[in-house]
Amino acid sequence: MDAAVAVDIPLIKDRLLSTFAVSRTKRDGWQRRAAFPGVTSSETEANFVPGGIVQGLGAKDRLGGGHEFNARGKLLWKGDDIRLTLTGDYSRARQGASPYHLIRTAQLDPSGNPTLAGLYNICIGTPAAALDTIGLGAVCGPRVGPGTALAGVNVDADPTNDVAPYDDRYVSDRLNVTYGAGNNYSRLRNYGFAGTVDIDISDGIALKSITAYRNQKWAIGLDIDGSPAIIFQPTITQSQHQFSQEFQLSGSSIDDRLKWVVGAYYFDESADEEQNPIFAGGIFSVYNPIRFKTKSYAAFAHMNFAITDQLGITLGGRYTKEKKRFWPSQIDANLFLQKLLGLPSVLYPDPADLSQLQPTALQKQKFDDFSPRLGLEFKPNDDIMIYGSYSRGYKSGGWTTRVTAPVLSAPTFKEETAETFELGVKSILWNRRLQINAAAFTTKYKDMQLLIQRGVSPTFENAGDARIKGFELEVQARLVDGLRLNGSLGYIDAHYTSVDDPTGVILKDSDLPKVAKWTAHAGPEYRLAFANDSSLTLRADYFYRSRMASDSENTPELYGKSHSTVDLSATYALPDNKLSFTAGGRNVFNERFIVNGTNQLAGAGTLFATYNRPAEWYVSARFDF
Image (tube, rainbow, N blue to C red; front, side, top):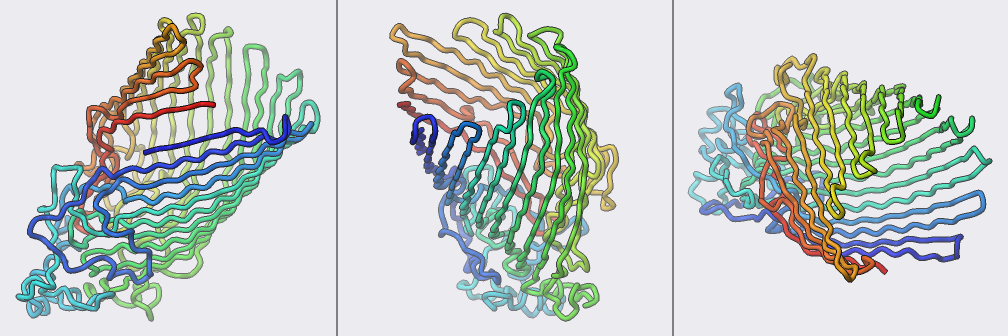
């Protein structure tokens, strides 16, 4: 159920105006939890939370649904030479976690050593005395939280302490069913305020000030391993607030041939986060409280000059300076690495505390960048514009927040840059019945930032350089009265030009993640008008995307297949469009494909993916007054 209302209220005629909107959504989850026949577990992840992280909303039986509430208000004061706009918004979401589908498990990593899942199964299925003889007595011994040992619990003739084993028995072809029994929640609270002041200094010059504040709190608990066992179950809480201030001075001159804007921007952000991923029945239980702070300053200028009525030039540039601060911490709460490997204390950031895997001292990074833009526009006539542009983009660096083994310095990654050339045409033809836009582009990435799974750690790294080139075509046509068609076609050729990965996970011929070679869309719409001025509008939307890698490692099982989806809708509108009714469906042929996934086979011993939503049908009504 989705309900929304918006209203415009003039408080003082022609001076003070207001808009208010409220919406509420309730959605059932599409993935159902089920008990696996003959397998139970005597433990829950609540036993392994040293940071006191919020534990869920109960063992909900569905994933992918939830409740959302949104509200927004706006006030506009219109003076003679000044306009003041105040906005505020608030949103709250209490949802189930994202659905995950288990693809396969692994007892051994590629080197032949046990994964965390493999160690877990050895612990629960081997008598305690035998574990001592093979050096796993401490690993399988008492754990943080419950204080009990996993050693031999499934072979000690006491069924009350049995825990679920972990292997491929939980892999299922039913995407809408999971055997996970752990945390299943996502809570979000987000609100913000903004004030904009527009001042007309003179006929050709205006000053604008934009001040904004935003605050967000988020908590999530997931059971990703898809089983009643506790193999990979993370919980995360996050708190973030930010403030920004922007000034713009804009104007026009030379008979409006020159339009320009100069400005300055300031951004201040602080964030706290606590991660608590639980691996292998708490054998490896991580507590990861971290804190960030970012300050960013920028100055920018942009101008467009009409050299002639047909030829124009655009010049712009932005200088950015960023200061980032990071307070790391990662606690191996069960001293797993010491129990398993007995690493020398000199390999730890604090030799007196072998539970701390990262240095806790303040980390600092600074970045600065100048990003220019150049563009040319040529209009051979009023219906066609040909353009070309060059621009440079920039993304600052940072830190990887979770590691697999102790480190003496917090792992960093540096900034990424991109240079793009684009050539295109925009046209309105056939007495404004046909619009065709086409563009070809090439982008050169340097020090591309990629997320690579290293053991149990999702690691950000500068994996190398890349080139992406392609073209886009968009068409909108009014073929006959009542019949409209819009469509698009996109092609991207993406490849690495150099690779910087000594482990060999990323190769020069690897596919870039999240890049599909072909995309297409076609959307015919037909409006049938009746004698009483009511109407019926029928619409179909066809979407196509070719095969695409979900992760940087190009895990074969995580490729999203080539797929096509179709959306349909029919809208009946009464005269003057005051009241309308719509019925429709999304993904009506129930095409299922992977949209995201993670390969934890070498760490936790699990491979999982998120699939798109199944077919959905809806009806709605809209009333304008």
